[in-house]
Amino acid sequence: MSAPGDQTGKPFQIDPDELFFEYFRSSGPGGQNINKVSTAVRLRFNLQASDALPSGVKERLVRLAGKRLTGDGILIIEARRFRTQERNQQDAVERLTNLVTRAWEPPKPRRPGKPTRSSVERRLKKKKHLSQKKARRGPVRGEE
Image 1 (tube, rainbow, N blue to C red):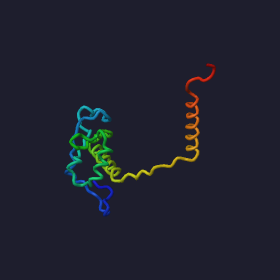
Image 2: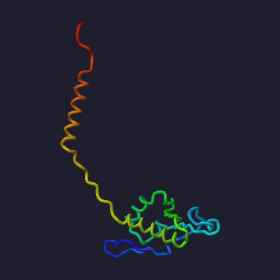
Image 3: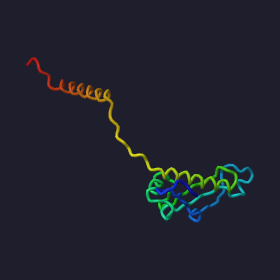
């Protein structure tokens, strides 16, 4: 499996020996074979032990993976959309590739925005109005 390269331009390669596949019966499409053939695929990729990904990509991948990542650092992807085991296996690998590709892109640095002139004016006007309202509160002065 390959995706974008590192800073030197070399594409990374995840060793196929790092991908573990488990097959089980799917509840999806399959017709009469649904109770006889294990077509669904569970892909396991040990993210923490992998040397194919730089540490920055691993950190972003942990955030992207969400609940698909176990406490041991194993990424689990289940594929059961298709009727054949081979196609589900391809689908799982494609989904892993897409996740890694998304994690490979560093996030854009956030630049703080600047409030518009009208929003500043509205805020100051409201602040002055509330200040005047509170200034009018207090003991009643008059006939005593």
